Structures are given as structure tokens and as C-alpha cells.
Image (cartoon, rainbow, N blue to C red):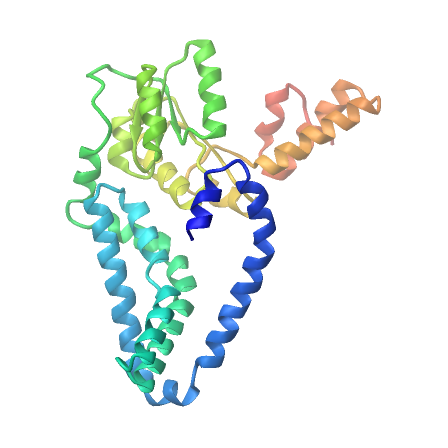
Length: 332
């Protein structure tokens, strides 16, 4: 553990990690195989109700305690809820403690077996909890005081400047940064919402209106002036946050232009369904750029290349407007 901490701060961390990844997979396999060998089916059958009750108490208790602690510490409700769900299962170190307890006769063999069964139950339940994450995030947003707390934590006041017909950028990562730089060059106004406080502080130091928090918060979107904005660019890759931000933005400003990104093709229609006007799929757009480069090098005319790309883009996104961006009609 200490060696890992030291290596992580050195310039060799990526090289060491690349060599360790195969071993990680081997040890993960050994862990689950050994866990399965320790499970006694008779104990599971004889104590099924007791084990189920203990798993429920454990998972719910850890989720509530961790989530409440993170909310109290000022973390937004989405991050707090998802983090609590990830940490709701029994950790691997509990097996070490249980083994020590058995060796020191603090617990007997039956209790040790019960601990293993409960641990296995919590591990098996984790994927289901993560699938329910978006639903539970919505439930957490309804808790008393959550919206008020997050609204009060929006970093810091920048005065009463009236913002209107501007661009709201949700997520200032690589995509958001490119967009922001282009808007800066044109002298166009924009506000930023980002979950990284360091990015928010840096933008505020540059005089850019930036707010810390989850873009899916309607209170935060209002503070960013989405009700008066002309365009909102949702650049975050997280589908849960993106859909929430689009839905709230559309409710607060029905005529706002919404552009967002999709990781895979299946997400394109989902994002349109919640109100996105245009959805960009980065991998597909990268593929089109490869096509453009290769065709031009093979002697295909610029007009024919542009028409082909426009037609391919329109077919992929199922939007006739896709070809309008290039001033060409798609070929029949």
C-alpha cells in the first residue's frame, strides 16, 4: 500500500501500472474463487432470512451513513448518492478482520460463515444498486434541504450582472474548454457549470462566471442564467447528469438551443428524447474526419467529399439539418 502511494507520485506510475494490471486481474479472479470455496450452501439455506435481513441492514445503513456524511461535508447530492452506493458493500478488508476474529476465538465458525454469506450478498447486490443509481439520485434530490444546501454552496457571488442571450457550458473538460476558448476569441459571453472546484476557481479568477455543482440542479441552472440563455452546451459524458441538465434547461427555457454529446449511438435518441436539439457522437465525428482526410488524399474533390460526409452524418443522426452545416444537399 505504501509502495503504491510512493510510486503514484513518481514519473514511473504509468509504466508500473501497465505491468501490474495483468496481476490485478489474476488476483481478482483468485479472490472470488477463494470466496466461493469458503461459502457453505447449508449455512446459506439454513439462515436465508437472517442473511437477507443483515444484507439489507448493512447496505441501507452504509448508504445512508456515507451519503449523509458526504452531504454534510458539502458534496452535491448526485456525487454523494452514487459514492454511497459504490461503497455500500462489505470491503475486502472485512475478510481479514473476520479471519483474525476466528483465529483469536472472538467469533466462532458459524459466525464466520455468516459474515462470509452477508459479504457475498452485498457484493452480488452492488451491480443492481448501481443500475438503480439514477433513480436513487432523483430520490435524494427530493430530500428536505438538499436543494437549498446546494444552492447556498454555489461558488461565490459575482454580483448582480444581468446575463442574457449567452451560452451556458455544462462541464469544462476538454470539450468545454475548446468551446470556451472559441467563444473568448469571438468576444461572446458564457457561463460555466462544473463539478471540479479547482476549474471553477480558475475560471472565476479569469473573470468568467463559473459555478460549482451538478449541472442537473435546476437551482444551479437558474443561477447560471439558463432561462435567459440562447444556447446550452452539455459537454459532460455522464448520461444521468446530461439528461437531467437538458430536461431542466428545457423546462426553464423552452426555446433554448440545446447541444450535447453521446458516448454511443444508442444514447443519441435518448438525449433527443429529453429535449436536445443536436447530439454529437465524438467517435463517429472522428471517423468522419478520417474519411475526409483519406478521400482528399485519394483525389476526391472537396465538394464530393463534403456531400458524402453530410449525407453520412444526416443518416447517422437522422437529421436533415445535418447537411445544412456544410451548405450542401446530401446526394440522393
